[in-house]
Image 1 (cartoon, rainbow, N blue to C red):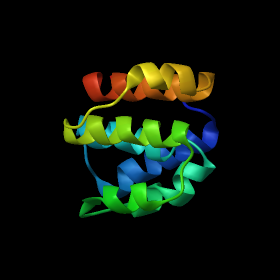
Image 2 (image 1 turned 135 degrees about the vertical axis):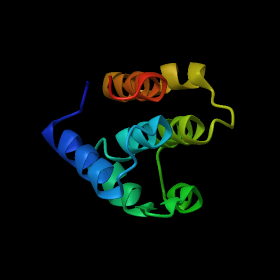
Image 3 (image 1 turned 60 degrees about the vertical axis):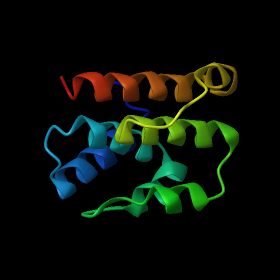
Image 4 (image 1 turned 180 degrees about the vertical axis):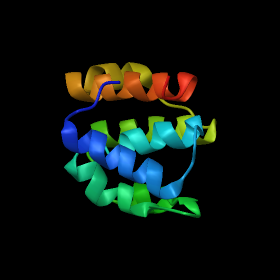
Length: 113
């Protein structure tokens, strides 16, 4: 599984284990994005709790357009709703963000397999 760095893997596993969501692919995909780097962890992962993900508060944060689109992807994978402009993502995301998006889609489809 692709992780941005060791901290991403640690934080993903910590959130996954702390909330005990098992193989819930929707949560796994969202956790994957929300723990990807320092900014996402600081502004997004803190809004995850036993009651779920507070998407309204996540989106109330100040995000660049690339991050916002990545978060919209995570929300769409989580809730199976909403529309996302992937063509805009291809023009906006750098290689790391693109890889995150692809891996999040893979996690949502296949879980941790």
